[in-house]
Length: 198
View 1 (tube, rainbow, N blue to C red):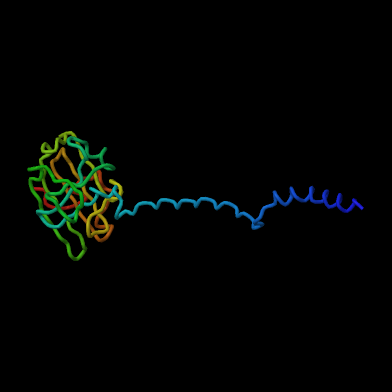
View 2 (cartoon, rainbow, N blue to C red):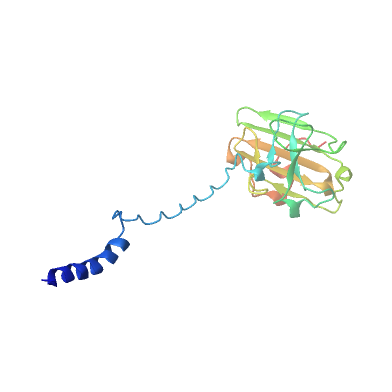
């Protein structure tokens, strides 16, 4: 009658390892959570981008206005059309981070405000030597396309030309596109922006 005892011993020998190595908590282990995908960096707004600094001009009156000029002293006008920065007659809140025009650079300034058509302009003479501009430089045009992100405070459009060889400059800021033509730069200030250049 030893058979039941032997059978019980054999059964215990087989089941004991299974009991020892069995997981006491049968709850399944969750899969690891994947790391979140970072959100794409939003494109900078034209109004807040650092690229906008120094790219805003203003035409307020005969004494307070700005022009675009080459970033560096002695630069050429046309080659700098995409990199130019704003220079103003003095520090203006309407032209953030603009520079100050060199002393005696502006020799004359004639301001016109057309309330019916909604534009303002300044035309006049300059002394190219005060910023090292060349007398052989026939100049070029600045508008909202060049330099990029440029604008005139309070207006939808602007056009400005600087002609060192003739020592004249002009800028007009407009509500309407047709008052600020940007496709006539080769005609120069006197044809693009009629005004007083004395």
